[in-house]
Length: 147
Image 1 (spheres, rainbow, N blue to C red):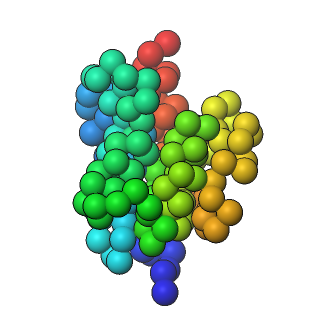
Image 2: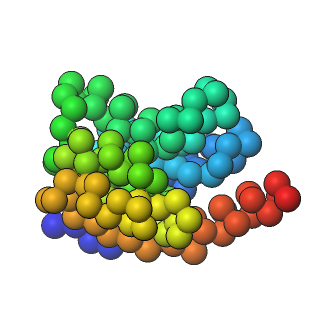
């Protein structure tokens, strides 16, 4: 049985990943994949570093988790990500058959809920708003510093 404390605990790990992105002057989004109470994949945005538009935090974490498990399906896993996934990441989450998605801040402009709410696997449980204020504030501060 999961508790909100577990969700907050792992979201804090995702926020630590977002801070790593920030240190690299990347958009501060972080993600971790958890299986049986253990982090098996982590990632943060690397689009600038790798010159790769697909190098989002979720993609990095999903790839690491699949590698760890030796298989592409993450139906027994939870992905924690600081910001609502984009359509591309939602597609990857759907293809991986992720068991559970937990995200912090919503993304009104680019989030999958606006453009592709059916992209996830039908059995994927979605929890939103975990440590939302912290994730949103990090994003706002980053973009304010760019203007």
